[in-house]
Length: 288
Ligand code: ATR
Image (cartoon, rainbow, N blue to C red; front, side):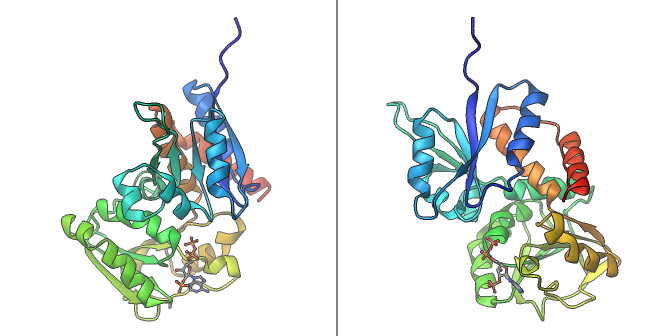
């Protein structure tokens, strides 16, 4: 008897050629014994919805969404997790159907949970009671702020080049922050405060080769400074963190943890991320 076709998943984006997600999910599948395939789905910039709908109609079970389609994916979901609703963006779709067999997709956002798990589990830093500086107020920061708040730090400052965008993001999360007893405020990059225990860089400054957009001295001694980027893009940030006496961390752990969270949503099983992160680090070190 032939074995059934494996369930199909993909990462949908533009570009997707660089994506590490297929390799990560292949390792999760091998580890958990789940029969699935995971491919890259390159979506034309003006045809995201139709491309993903065709993928779902071909029998696929779900997909991850990457740049620049996380907001469009949010609009395609029939149901949203609380964290996706707060983020206003979706990075994971599960192609559920309603009782009549019509598509009723679930939209989730696992980026924030992945970031928090990387900080608390992999970097072994509890967020509870700490002061956090989140740099940037674009899609990357919006995707993680709700989960950061849920980890109950004492305070989170969102600092951005355009302060009005930081203020809008803070306003969107004000009730959530109050419910969790977190002091949440928006500031400019020049006047973001001092002595933070944890800094998270959600700006795309390093992609443009720009320096870390805050002054020296914003960190407390021994702080954790994490960039959501990884590979060569994170190198200037990590050098800056080292010069500040901080523990520098790139976004590779977050990448693996958000994937594990998506895998758990799809398959109901949580993979062991440690060996996958280690293998990815080794691979990047040998050919970045
Ligand atoms: P993403 O989805 O990756 O977050 P985005 O939504 O375009 O991309 O947001 C990019 C973020 O990086 C923004 O917060 C942006 O600041 P503005 O809102 O003021 O544009 C920030 N950013 C980009 N380049 C920057 C730079 N050179 N210095 C400081 N902040 C920068």
